[in-house]
Image (cartoon, rainbow, N blue to C red):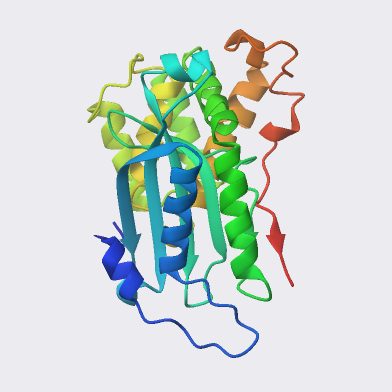
Length: 280
């Protein structure tokens, strides 16, 4: 974990001193983000089973991750899923180093590795103007579409499990993630290498499988600074889905009963892209 980054508590984030950057800066208090998130999850029929918070010194950059379950779902795929849980995460700052971000995603039950896709990471808001209001609306919109986003994570996981990935191919991807994509630092590179040789967890897939490799990397990404964790997790997910599955032509209808789904190569949701930003 980066120096001066630590797991922390809700009360620590709520008690952090608010910034003063002038009239043009709109403060988005960590306390408001936490309260709005928990209230909206509850009102939308979700139960929070686990709350996790991380922050740097003085909580100038903070992150919240919530493991959630719907109290009632009509989706058979979701009801039968046993490996992945549903997740909501946010990142906020007081020091102007990052914009507010939030996303619905998933986590792997055996290890709490996170999963976030690009089409879910579609909101990153600068702290100006009506940012506080827009943040509340975005949290609400993400939660309203939670089951749709979560279903996509299940589909992507099932697709990755179809792909055999030799240790040589994993090593080549690992090199690209470090040198080309710059998603891993040296310490994380070493973590993935160690996991390939001696995994800390069992992922219901062979060692030479894309889903297993995916988890080795997301396990290493847990050490990412809260400022970058959401965007790095999203970029890695889209790298695997667009670059690996897309090139192989694996189609969504291979892993879902939904009629009329587009192939990975055709659907724009699998393109690599940066989260949208708003410069007001």
